[in-house]
Length: 256
Image 1 (cartoon, rainbow, N blue to C red):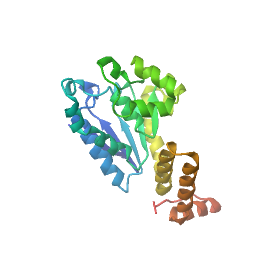
Image 2: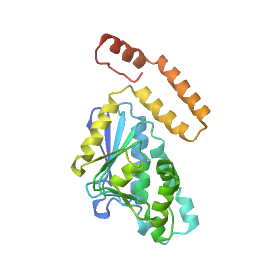
Image 3: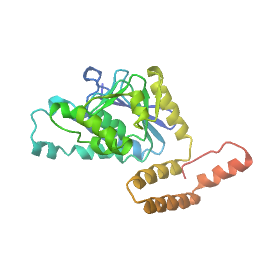
Image 4: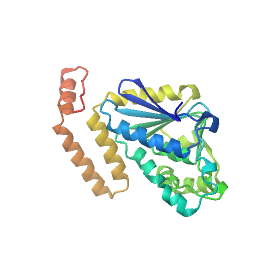
């Protein structure tokens, strides 16, 4: 079977599943390529309105495949251009929900942080242990983690390499929700289904503006928000949503 599986479990929802259980879903080169291809395709699929990304009950992804990196030199790592594969996930215009059970370590933690919402099981562990094998995070760990939890928590995690529990991750702002381990995937799918029922253009504009505004000056970010807000008044979904509210009925959104 493929090392990355793509399913359509619910209307408007795609499920991307890393499928390397014998390696705790470690992110080897093939998995990275398949993830990039999957997210590129799903980002273009009009019928897909939200994406759930997961592994299995034991591991979301336990990190990079160390065997593929151990003997590599700097030029070889540069020429692999793996940042382009990560970018395909980050650039997905549809909301991405990470459903995390078990280990989300190293590249696995970075992968989860590429999502927009993280649903974690009570037994999940998040960490950036790269320091323990002589390197450092290289796919956003020093940057996305710091933006999520702040300098002091990020420094502790990255410099010690020690993982944190799902509850600790929740307290520091790294995850959106913690649920019993057996409920992680179902919770993520229900959340995705709820988002998929919303007006798609508004959903995509919210994601784009929120992410772009995070690193912009407040005045610029507010301008981006204002322009996107105004733009939505030219959509049929805005007219449908407000008319449905006035008529006290359920709206039917077309993504137009």
